[in-house]
Image (tube, rainbow, N blue to C red; front, side, top):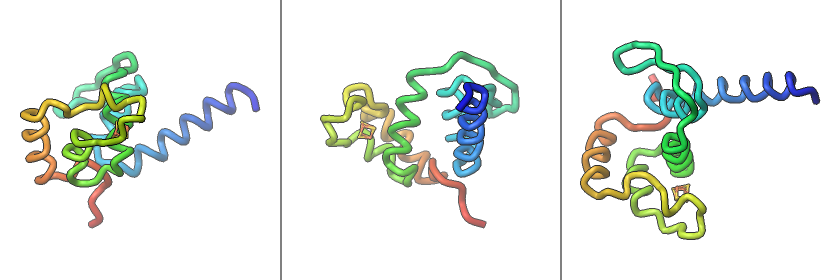
Amino acid sequence: MSIDTQYAYLARSKESHLSTVTPRVARLLKRAWGLPYESESGDAIVKSPSRVCAVKAMCLECMGYEAGAIDAIRDCQSVACPLHAVRPFQDAKLAKIKARRERIVPLGMKRKT
Ligand code: SF4
């Protein structure tokens, strides 16, 4: 498989994944991958890949983008996971604020209409 074919496959794979998540999570994933994304105000932003966003995206995916994922990540007991020590939402106060927001609009998958 040529390198161009591999890049094309990766691009298709990312595009396909983005189509299954909410705009908020899509922004997080694009930020993690270093792809251009739009801010909440609609401005186009290009930044280099972010390790912080990558860890956050991985933990959210690990928890299935479920409502309550933020609490689940904070309380994650998988101490053998290489990301456990650096997982997001460990700050209880911040996690509480984000969890409240999450209850209003679920973080993960797109709502069925
Ligand atoms: S730290 Fe916990 S939530 Fe994050 S990826 Fe590892 S097992 Fe999943």
